[in-house]
Length: 73
Image 1 (cartoon, rainbow, N blue to C red):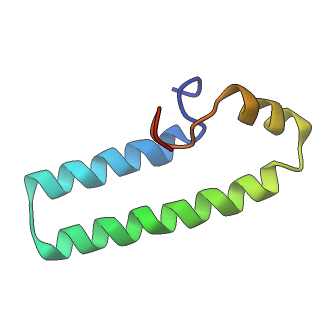
Image 2 (cartoon, rainbow, N blue to C red):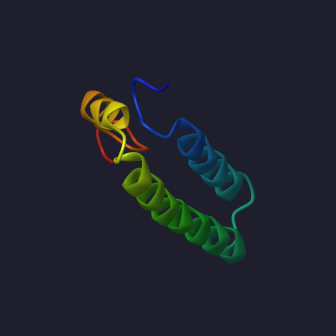
């Protein structure tokens, strides 16, 4: 997974949230999932800002292009 996306744990949280929406569709679940995914985006940006200070992580960022979704983001 770490060769495909830089944050595979967050990617699996996103898959789990989408699966919950599919299984138990409601406006509440959609809203909670969207807020959670949005907050993950902020957290990823914050973490990467800190981690970019390390040259090894910058090399990793260059090797693994996508953060969450291969081919998209």
